[in-house]
Amino acid sequence: MGKSKCRNSRLLSSLSRHRSSSILRELTDYAVEYINQLQTYEHHEFQSLIKLAEKLPAKEHKLIKSKLREMAYDCVTSDPKEWETYCLTPIQVVQSPCSGFYDLFAEIIPINLEYLLLNQKEDGYWDPTWTWGRFEKEWETAKEEWRGILTLDYLKVLNAFDFLEK
Image (cartoon, rainbow, N blue to C red; front, side, top):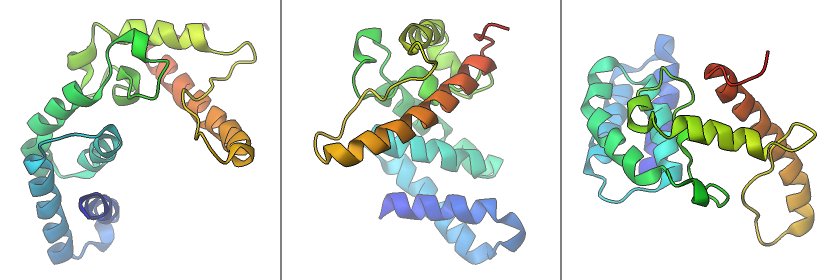
């Protein structure tokens, strides 16, 4: 229930010219309260909350900023040995030096960027670090789609950090 209300709040925030102030206010207040009461963190939810925070007005963003930073410490995997597994890496949260989380991971970001370059396939793409473990036929199609998504995301990040050869 929390995730859907947060997503709905983000959607409504992005439709600012059509705002129904009472429903938007209610959803935004709920999202802020929900985020600040969290005791345990899950990285998928954290990624959604980052996107929500980007759409919130400055006042509400300020109310959740310290909780999001706490979540970042808990959810992001800073150990390069674990990046081969399904986890949230620093560059998945810090996608440019302008990120509000950059200072938390500034030391590990260059290592994460080098890791990306080392793991790029000869043909220029990146493979997912996960599998579904079932539906193998469908996974082969999805894997190709994920390669495209990951490759675009990683190229954007490498470019933002000026890590691409010109």
